[in-house]
Length: 496
Image 1 (cartoon, rainbow, N blue to C red):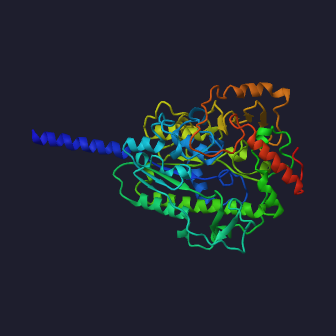
Image 2 (cartoon, rainbow, N blue to C red):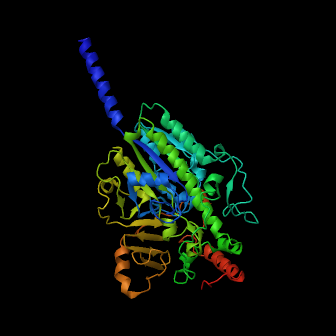
Image 3 (cartoon, rainbow, N blue to C red):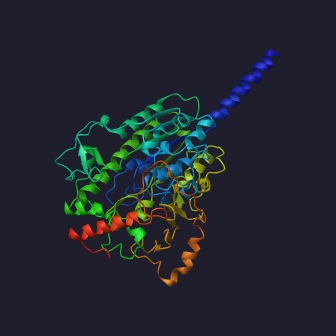
């Protein structure tokens, strides 16, 4: 009898281990501020991203993917909580640690906690949430968490752009430090070490890379890979003249004043490309570690950037707009178990809000009922499957843009609009919203806009730099002041 019981116990244990072994691991690569200037999206002809390109060729490359919000904090809050800003009230930038008790209690299960609660080993490295939030509910979400910072970087004065007075947002140059002084290398090294361990349980590993977020400072080797003149992106000089004032106020033209005065755009763009190239090196380090581990055949890789980035288009620098340069984001999913969709491109409009439900579905986990979005598993299996719902990006309460395969439709809090025919106008140079011929298009798009909005969470605000229903005037006044400075500096064309 004891032998039978022992036999049954062994069988049970083996069965349990077998089930555990089949549960897929997750490797989530989180990149900061990377637009389509990468080989697999073709946004710039001089991009050098061989490692990410290879991942895109192996997995499903979502070439029409868009962020939930065009800023680090609201984008990552939406992705990690699985909740749209108009449901959470987290519209601008926050420090989650400073939000009043009770404001976020209804969001009980952030993405890492979902996996941890289901028996996964969770590890987070550097910027997964927005930086100030890295200590938010850390013990609940992570078995292991480490934030890496840069050592003091020794900028090479003979190369790049060194603005005077110094501005860390626009500096672009290499540093002479060894690799071990760069935070992204250290994150990649830690991830590689994690992948070399023996793991008894499945794991959820989130690796955050800071570059190409400003400042654009990277190893000299990466800078020197871009010796040729850097091609300027397509720019229409009077691009803002047909855009409503809430949209114009998103353009950070104040950056253009010193940058154009110093004739520095080329060096800034070189710095951006070199920063992306360094991130690609680090992505490659992690991917090679996975390939050399015993987990390669059972690890789902998802790579995303929190939003895009302007480099002079729309007279703007950085993110924080509802135009294509800021909303479009790299997004790749590689599931080694996927026999049908891997190696294909998905042109359908998708949003990063879908990451939570997609990873839960692929791992066989049930997400909380409050989570927004949908699983993209059907599009992994058939990337050409039509997507009925457009991708939506929110920037402030009342401001929304919708992206379909053909159109971009934007409505601001005051009812003003933008409409672009993407198939003919990929740079969004001609706003069609005021033309009566397109009323039906706008009406069709409008049905996807939110009909109810959560009030803005009032506590924990860190940065509030948007014109919206809760702050309709401040940034417009600031923008008009910058336009005046722009003209006084002799920069043309006029913007009105």
